[in-house]
Length: 85
Image 1 (cartoon, rainbow, N blue to C red):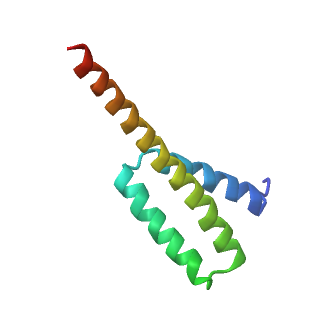
Image 2: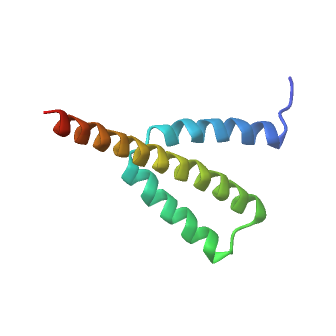
């Protein structure tokens, strides 16, 4: 039976976390990001935990940005429709 290294397990977890992040609403991602930042600012986590939090925070921030860019595009389309009508 093949053994997996911690980095293999971390990669699988990161992929699962990324998939979970993709399903979050803007508000869910934002609220979790606030929690992640607060925990990182406390500085009491282990290095491994801090790295995992940082990676999760990056994924959450990217998800928030996706939502915000999508909202901006929707507003621009709505404004263009109003001008045309």
